[in-house]
Image (cartoon, rainbow, N blue to C red):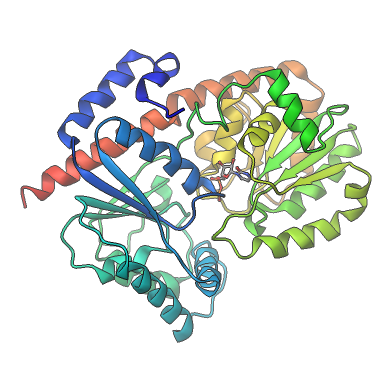
Length: 408
Ligand code: UDP
């Protein structure tokens, strides 16, 4: 059933609900458009699913369009994504041409007459070039921009400069060399989505059974796309170290995003490297997209690991913390915004495999520690990272930017 704002009363309280309705009042009937490049897989699609629903529920006419691109286009934009996180890139004329052409083609059949356009991530960034600019455009970048390849960032700036505002996930991602107004808005999770809502033990068992996950041993799980920045090979190395101390099982749950052409190659590579343990059932790979399964895994695992090398924010961390499951994660990108080391989880240098293993073993061997970390994690998320707070941030931003527009 369609979710409504009142459904969140029990989680965030009446004050929050009332303030959202209040802030939405000046935006009634406004027409807002979000554009990204995938409807599933990855954090952006996850957020838009809930955010767009709630924006409509409070009276703002909000649409969501998905950029259509050719496979070549997504290969190029994945390279751009990697280069924004610091990986070398050969920025050829051909790549630029593919990038522009796909955006231009999409613009031909996508009419935009909205009051404000919010473009997510680099794939649809150049769209702005193909419209007469009649409203504010916001670039919402979910990637860590602190260490990009300069040549690429300089090229992307030709589009970014046209935007009215850039929204980033952390203060640390703001760029001195970008003379466009920059704001920080933290991402969020939806506590009532199928992925995060409370689910019954029967539903949990049914899903685990369906995907062959046995609970005869404690589970360690990483839920992440098969992507090199999520370091699935590193997770397996950590798991091997943990197993020397405690008998347990690893689940790597990673569906394939439609805008991520690298995932199959990474999956195959990791599969080969772990074949022996996979055949023995010590490691389980899951590639199906199934929200209830992710929910179940994040609840029944004794530890959630997030061994990312780079991470824009890391919604998987938020999701696990919300379920009261301890998280051991890399101290990179947006993860330290969520985990206070030793308080509601553990943070480690991504290269510190022994450190990861030691923290996981400590949790596996101490139920009280696990419980305490879990409780604190849930409250931290309730306070900071729920969709209701995110909605408030967007309402504030839209009120400001649309009001400002009328006074230029
Ligand atoms: N996700 C999922 N199934 C998977 C892998 C990931 O549903 O097999 C979801 C995950 O639960 C989270 C999102 O995809 O909601 C990933 O967001 P995150 O910010 O952690 O990383 P991103 O993929 O955006 O880099």
